[in-house]
Image (cartoon, rainbow, N blue to C red; front, side, top):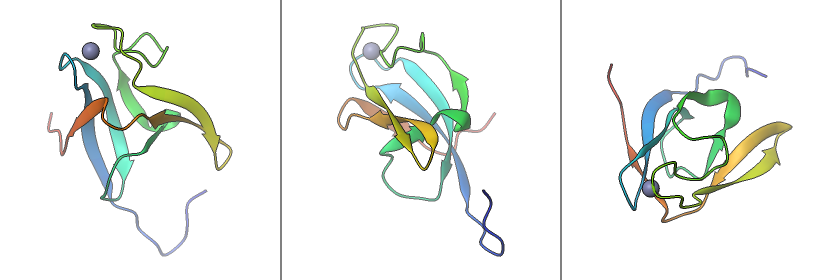
Length: 88
Ligand SMILES: [Zn+2]
């Protein structure tokens, strides 16, 4: 639900596997700060097989959860790294 009068800055970032550098998601992040979760409906490009594992090395990098009635992928810290402000 959008909050009126409050604009949240959206950052376009890419999420990579820390082990093998595989691109996992291109994601629209709300506001700055540490990425702890991905809302499933904000993932623009999904390069995984949908099982929250790196398709290249098989490492589990996130867990399914529900937050604010939306499905999220909770990032396991230390498993991924972020590249910010991806330009196309
Ligand atoms: Zn990997």
